[in-house]
Length: 139
Image (cartoon, rainbow, N blue to C red):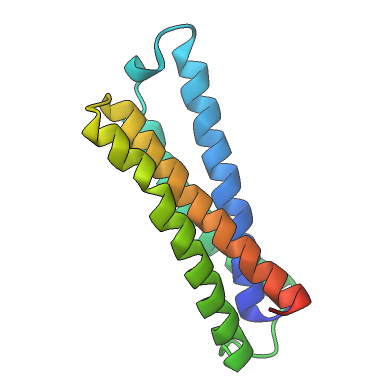
């Protein structure tokens, strides 16, 4: 497993788990109240910060456990990254229609912010998944 592939795997797992943790915290805070009234800013910022920190620590730990032969991306790594980012960019572009529509409809900030966070998480998970499939099966 290349250095880039390991980083992609860590990014996928951390992105998905921190978002699910965020959703769990927000749902537990709702307790029957309308979702738009839930205090979401602090958990969202914590979730994003924890995701960044865990991605860094996870990549270092994975590399210490199973060292790579090289840390320089080769032509295959660059091609897979380009392909994965291209496909994920389409998901991001299409997904941003939802928060844009919510903003135009003057929805509460809760729904707009959460739609943006959900789309960014979908972009990260989808892009990493496409890259990992390309590493395993080719593209």
